[in-house]
Picture: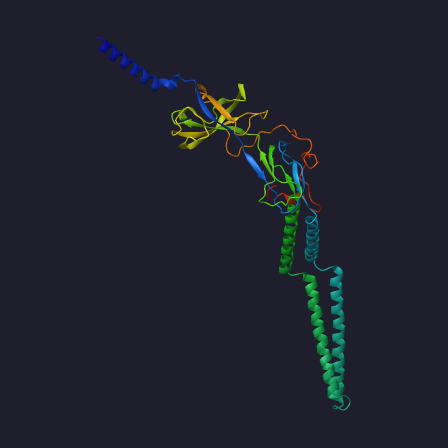
Length: 384
């Protein structure tokens, strides 16, 4: 009798366990994920290779988009820019001269030269005919044959000079050749490109913050040589922030892009931070060793990025966080964060009033335009 009772109890326990395993998800009200706070970072470097004369920002400073963080020596760049601008101005004058063609005075001078050559040609022709008549009338006794030949040569030279002056007049009226104009214009465009390049080089001597961020590290100091390969600052972008967490394949069906939820961190145990699911990986992977979960580490999981609202900027990079996703809110219509989304603006407060160089962090200001440069010449290419 006791054996049958034990069998019945065992069957009931097994059936209950199977029932619980089968329907346990339907009884859950939320999904709990574990991960760490993550954010984007930017390594800033100068485009030029010059010596740094000022470094304004330091670790912990809040910087705004367009704020000057450091500056290079411009003493070698400005004379090169002035020289290129002078060469471009000279070539521009050549192009203008060719487009304008000959001046009215030059055309009038060419016409006067033609009239003068015509008079000389008539005079030489008349002299030759007169000497030829005398030579024929006197039978060659009054005028020598040499005089006749000289007069004929002078008449021919005068006629040729008249033709030369007529051609010169035609050239003056027609103006420069189209090929010469095109060559001058091409040279002028090349000089303009050189000026634009030097304008950009001078503008790049100021290292500006590309967006609102916090200075995470300051690598260079005044007097150091800058280069495009040498990082000067590392900026931490404060918005957006997200929790890099991992969801198992069993719970993946409950997670949707835009799904609302909240996170908790150990530093603020009684506070929740609202957010939404902005990214779900389409490729499974093994659980990273840095993530502490209650599942086996060898199970396959999917990366999830849970974006968080943190207006007070209290969440730090790498901070462990727990994500809570209500299952009944799986079809929520929260804002889905796609790649390339713009960062949320942060309050513009400077973290330090004075840098180690003794110079305060300059306020945000428009990009400076080097002397003789126009803003259009600085529009091409990325800002430092």
